[in-house]
Image (cartoon, rainbow, N blue to C red; front, side, top):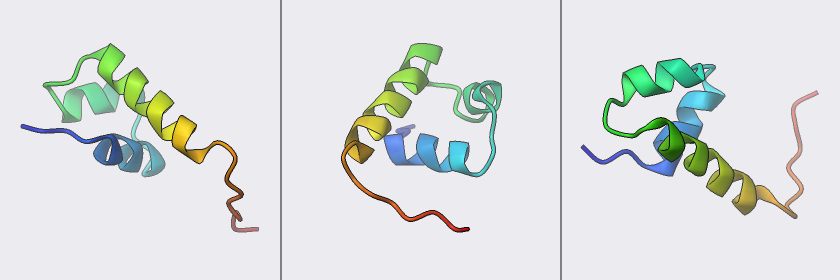
Length: 53
């Protein structure tokens, strides 16, 4: 099964915990989830995103 960075970030945005992610997606390991979060953060650097107030 392929787990994308988008799937991981979407799960985090939905409120899933780190442990939930490892349970939801049995193939990635802890370091894979950490790297997906870091990659998503690097994509967002330097971009202004308006948050709901």
